[in-house]
Length: 134
View 1 (cartoon, rainbow, N blue to C red):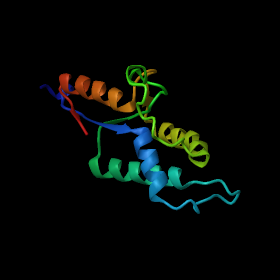
View 2: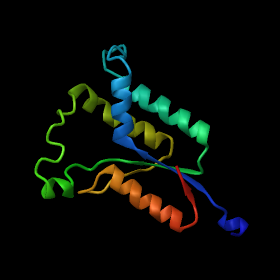
View 3: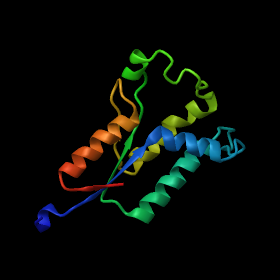
View 4: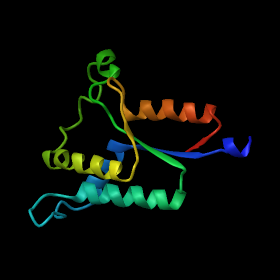
């Protein structure tokens, strides 16, 4: 591989997976002076920045679920036992996405597919182009 085509490392992140992890890992008492809950925002930002600093990828992409997927059409009970996303978490998602974009990291999602599907496709594309993924 020439210097111009050197292997790059691309970090692929499941956005909602990390958001939910942050939300459940930190206490709901984390709020702004206006009383707005921030545990998911703070936790997501901390985990993403820690990983970026530790791994130092050349590029990063955050994949986001885009609603109902083809799996719901194939299997009526797909994720049927999941609780509704808590309102206090829903209210933090916009700030998380704003933070991601502030870092210059794109968010990608495709209607009908989960973030995992997007990550799988991106990973394959990166590997086929001669790059590493994490």
